[in-house]
Each structure stands twice: as structure tokens, then as C-alpha cells.
Length: 453
Image (cartoon, helix red, strand yellow):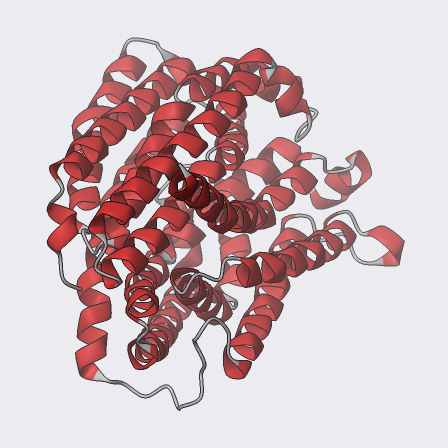
């Protein structure tokens, strides 16, 4: 009984800062959506576009931005698994080597992504099939964000390494500062307050880029000083054996996200054909939902770290028990948040936009999203546990099955029969359910207990 209480406290203590950090990370984009969604009338007249157009452009650019950061997330996944194993085995050499090679890989990948986005931003946004004005604005937003790819990569990889080593508080504190800076700069520039120029969508992009750059500097300062057994005390030069280990764990995650994002491009192309108001509503529902599923994401990070640490300490039973404890805790939170989404969808939507057509289009989809939160949270936790053990291939297979075999064909069928945005969100809910079931079955098999990373 005493061990169970200690496990509950440990899971909670590790998960809560991770949840808060993910909330704040998401808030960088969410605050941009909120601010452009409440674009002042005078600013809209000056800029030549309204809140719905600004919201659609910002949403599409943000989707493409995160699509382009797949490699950074994959590298971070490899770092988390290895630094967690190192922490459990008390092997500081392994942890610091994984950190250095993760940063090296992130730097190389981010330089490539920056060049691609700066040159081809309009074409990248054009794949969604939105209106010319939305595509142009989205391309301008993405071009500005592209200059922050390098600091974004360093920040993501550095914080992933810290989380694997058991430090979820430092990333939280950094993200608090990032959010404050983003809100202040974006607010001042979007609407042109206190005599500053009215920049609209450009202002939101500048705020996000500057804030993420400052966050990168803070992360580097922490790592140079040393934290949680990790310290950046040697040059970041390639060590091919460790690069191979990081990529072996991380690349399946990149494949998983590439599969999902490829499907998402097709999926969003279907939705943009419903009109700007429908896409703006879809984007808002996604943003609100992205806050609600963050407990699952944060507990998934905790499960990943705890599984890796316990496997490093050669205690797979405790790794399994910690994972199920994380699942129990996140299920309670997700049920509450899902219930709120079902009960007051229009109230939540009005927090972000004052366009009644968008609110009307998004109310039922938000309720549908709320009904499936439990399954989404379960998938995040169990997939996180599998990744912490180094089993990053199964989540890839899960994404292939759920998105390409369920979400896309069901969405296409529904749209062809007039189901509209509501029907599309039913298809998304089925996708979440399938992912949860497949993750649970894999975890129950127990093959993850004996994997080497």
C-alpha cells in the first residue's frame, strides 16, 4: 500500500509539470489564434481581411509548421528514451552523449527545414487548397516562423532530454517565459497597440518566433550549467555510434508523424472545401481540443520517462505499474475536460472568436471531440510508455491503420453524403478509439519489457 502511494505521488509529481509545460507550449499557438480571432474592426479594415480569414491562415501555417518539426520531435523521442535509461542505470556518460548528439541532429535538421520553408512557404500552404488570400497570408506567417526553426529544434531536443532525465520542472519554467513574451509581442503587433504598426497575422508570427528564440537561449543556459545529471560541457560534434542509437529509436516516431501529417494534409484539404467559416471552426475546435488532451500528452511524457528509468534499473514490473497509474490519473482528468466540452461548446468557442457563423459551425464538432477524450488520453499514455521502452514502431503501425484505414475513408464517405464538419469529427473520434485499442493490446503483450535501445 505504501509503495502504491509513493508511485501515485511520483507519477503525479513528474506528470503535472509536463502537463503544464505542454499546455504552455500549445498556448504559444493558441494565443496567436485567440488574438487574431479577436482582430479589432479598425485593424481588419486597415489590413483588408477579417478574423475568420486571419484565423484560417494562422491555423494552416501552424499546421505546416508542426509538420515541418516532425524530425525535431523524433530526435527528442530518441533523447528521452536514452536519457531515461541513463538515469535509471546511473550512467552520466550515456545521458550526456545522447544530449549532444540529439542537439547535433536537431541543428542539422532545422537548418534544412528553415531553407525549405523560406523558399517554398506559399507552395507548402497551397497544398491545403484554401482561398488565395488565406494561402498568401499563411505563406507569410510560415516564412516568418521559418527563421525560428533552429531555436525551436534546440529547445525541443534539450527539453526532451531533461524530461527523460526526470526534470519536468525546468521545461515548464522556460515555457512560462516563452508564453508571456509571445502574448506581449503578439498583442502589441497584431492590433498595433501603443502606437506600434498594425501587422495582423505578421504580428502573431513575429511574437511566436521571438518567444521561441528566447526559450532556446534559456534552454542552452540551463544545459551549459548542468541539470538533472545532464551537462553540455563538450562541443557538439558527431558521434556516429550514439547518433545511430538516437535515430534507431526516433526515426519510427518520425515515420509515425509523417504518416499522420500526410493524412492530415488530405484531411484538411477535404475540410477547406467546406468554406472558410467551416475551416475556421475546425481550427478552433482543434485548438480547444489541443488543450484538453494535454493531460494525456503530459502523462504520456511521464510514462515514457518512468518506463525508461525503471527498465534502466532492471525493474520492468515497476515500469508497468507506473504506466497503469499514469493511465488511471489521466483518465479522470480527461473525463472531466471532455464533459466540459460536451456541456458548454459555444461558451468555449466564444472565448476565441466573435464570428457567429464560426461558433455555430464548431459547436457540435466540439461536443463530439469531448466525447472521445478518454480514448485519446489512453492512447497518449500507453504510446508514451511504449516509446519510453524503445518500442517506437508500434505507434507508427497504429497511425497507419487508424488514419489511412479509418479516418480518411470514413471522412470521404461522410462528406460525399452531405455529413459536413459534424460527420468529419465523428470519423476523427473513431480514429482516436482505434488508436487507443491498438496501443492497449500492444502494451498488454509485454514485448516492450525486453527491448534494448
